[in-house]
Each structure stands twice: as structure tokens, then as C-alpha cells.
Length: 596
Image (cartoon, rainbow, N blue to C red):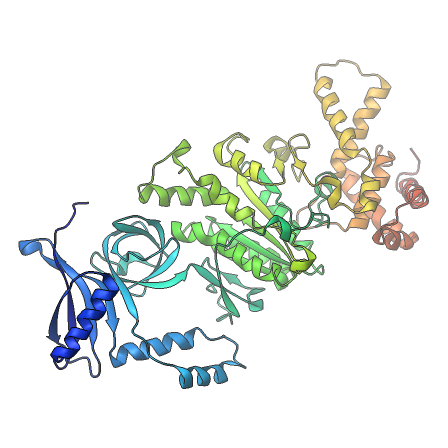
């Protein structure tokens, strides 16, 4: 950028009549005290100002034919300016209809006009969702700016001479030379109970055709994560309803569990099943779609609606057709909305689908803002991009209301490469990961959770006593089976014991197969685990295991309904286990006419 030559700082006074010498000197003294420099003041007639005056401070830039006037600050003491101040005061009032009338009355009665300085900037360049703005020396990082056409933007790259601003609306109305004003507010989203059951965009605006949403307030999209003293240990289970996860990789309220794998391996399905399983459990769910096709998001919303999950779910959509700035702020908007419920003492489950596309949108913005590219062209702060988002998930202490926010970030890998830049970043931030393997998925094992690479760093702390008692040696048994299965490929003859161990492990793998959108209750999982670990299903044909396990659940619930109550109460003693095993053998005999 070529540095302009400032001829001389000056101010222009617009009014219908010229001011007196005394008034002129008072204005000059005010400007000198305000800006600590001598300023030349001239008067220009403006018939549009019916009462008062308008004072513009700026300078001429350039020379000759290229000499232009640049406005830096405006002091609007006209009638129109004072009414604008009153309008802004009223807009700050509560959105609650039952209290807005007395608040408006009180504001009008007590309102006093002020000499309000307005910083004015000028658009230098615009394109690809980015505007470069000169002036606005007082603007801060993430402050919202308003362009003369009404388009909103956010400061993302403050520097000494100009600002890099991302645009949230259509950029066609923003042109070089457009006027820009500060708002003094950082980027935020509206919040409130009425957002439940709605589909909104990254700015909190409804996009489901169901009308406006009554907001209860406004919350910044970025805020500090809860401190250590404001948290408590993660020890309350958040059940996914997925047998393979709840048994071996349990998730607790306040945890951050990464779902990672190649495209089309069932990552979103796991997140949706977890949302479906929160029905009736007083958990607010927020699903954030980043960079997805609109048709895919529509199918997701339809699935949630058909299963009655939209009653407690908010869907935030920043689709692939939306601009990079909207995709960039979408997860932060979702997190801000989740914090509203968490700070009220409620439990929140938030899904970020997916953070790979989020990182790509941030990379696009950074390159357009001419930031230095690093590894894989990502900027150097891409780790901080996700750490400051995921660290906001927590289980708050009782002193802070006991609310929680559990995060399920999703990351897409290429050919199963978990050592890539973004996957390794997010793995190091989260409290465990569920790795979905393409080979398992295409072999029919769904969910395709790789038992060796998946982990939950919370572990048994996020399980009930009954579940921990039922799981037993499941993960060890499956690990032994997978190791033996590798050697089986080279063995021409197997002894009976090895064959039985392989059949047993094979039956466990088929037990863990689960249809999508069909989460299981905890007592159902415990019943199936107890039966399977006692070799009940070892002789069941593979294709019939799915039918057998649901039949077994119905049989036990009809024959011994007390077992359900005992498990729900956390009571899984040896007598209960023996009853489950006995009834399981009974059902096997009724089904296949024989025992083990």
C-alpha cells in the first residue's frame, strides 16, 4: 500500500447557519483537547440538517486530481443524530414483551443526549468475503463493523494502518470507498429457550421457515473457558445408546470425545444416535453442520424430527454454499448458545460436524488476509483455533450451577491417516477418540469402531457400577480375537480350543453390530453383555444374532421384569447375573432346541 500524503488535519462543520466566533472557538478547543493537535475548522451549509449540527473530522489525502477527503470521526449533534442515539438505547432493552413497555418509558424519561463520537472508516478493497478498511484506529479484534449498505463484518486482522474484515452478508453492496462504522460490540449471537427445535444459521437467524425467534439476550461467540476451580471431575455417564461405545469407550458429561475416520464411515450416524438417545434425559443437544450440503443437513433434520429429537435439539447450519466467514464462526456460535444453557445448570451435548472443514475455511480466510502460511498452508494459530473452542466444554462445579457441556467434534481423515496435521491437533486437545475404520465399515461391522486405536481417557469414571460389572473382560477378549484372526489366515488346521475361541470372538463382534437410529437402553446393553460373555450366543448363526439379541431382551423383560429395575438402581450382583444367564440359556433352548 502506498502511503498517502496528508495535506492538513481539518474539520468541517455542517449546519443551516454559520456559527459565531465564540462557538467556533469552543469547537476548536474541544477538538484540540480530544485529539491533542491543532485542527483547521471550516463551515459548509447543509439544508438537510433541520436542527443542530454535524461535525466531521478528517483530512485530505493525495495530491492534484487524486486529492480526496477522508473522514475519520463524526460528532453528530443534529436532530436526526440525537434520535438515532435514542433508537440505539431502546434497542438495548430486554426483548421480553411483558417488561419492554415500562423499560421503554423509563428510558425515554431519563434519556439525555450526549456528544457521541463516531469513528468512520473507508473500504479500500473488497472481494472473496474480505474487506480491507482504512481508519477506525480504535477498532478491536472481533468487533462488529457496519458498512453503509447495512452489511455486517467482523475485524479479524487488525494492523497499524488498516483492518482486515470478514463479511457476514452479501458483499456485492460493499464497494471501494464505502463508509464503515464501529459498533463497539464484539461478534455474538442471540440466545434463549425458544431456539430449541429450530434450525438457524451461524448468525442465529432462523432458516427453517417457522418465523422469528424471540431472543432473551445476546452472547459473544468467544469467551474464556471455565477455570479449573470452576470445574469438577467428569463422572456422570452420557450414554450414547451404542453398545460398542458405552461398554468400552464411555463418554461422560463435560467430556470431549473425538469421532474420527474417513468419509462415509458412519461418523455423523454415531453423533445422531447419541442425540436420539438423550430423549427424556433433560439434555439440550446442538448439532452444528459446517461445510455440508444443504440436502444432507435436511436429511439430518428429518431424522431428528421423525424420532422426536427436535424438541430438545438446535441445528446450526453453515452449509458449503455459505461463505467462509459464516463457516468459520458457526462452531463458536453453537458453543455460545450451549454455554447459555450450561450456565443455567442444564446439560448440553454439542456436535461439531466437522472441524476439518472448519479448519479449511479458516485457512481460506487467513490466506486472503495475507497471513503467513505454515504446514499444509494452515496459519500458525490453527491449533489455537480449535483449542479455545473445545476447552469451553466442561462439567461445572456445584457452586457454578452444576451444568455441563459435552463436545463430540468430528474430523475427517484421508486414507485413515490419523497423523495428519488437523487430526493430530484435535487428538491432543480432546479426552479420547473413536476411530472409525473403512475396512471394518465395508465388511459390515457398523459402527466401525477400531478397538485398538479408540480410547476414552475418562474410562470407567463415566460408567455406572452395573455397567462396569457387566463389561468385565470384553475389550481384552476382542483384542485376543483380533490377534488370533490375523494368524488364522496362515493356519491350515486349527485345534478345537482355538476354533471355539475364534467363534466366541466372532459372536462378540456380531453382537456389537447395531442398526443406525436404534440406540439401546442401558439395561438392554447389560443383559446382552452378560449373556454374550457367558458364551450364550457362541452357537447362534451370524445372520441371526441381531434377531436373537432383541428377542432375548423381550424374553427377559417379560419373564423377569424386576431385572430392569435392579439394573436401573445400579444393582448387578451375582444373583442378578445368574438370573440373566439362566433366562438366556432358556431362550436359546426355546429358539434352537438345545443348549450350549
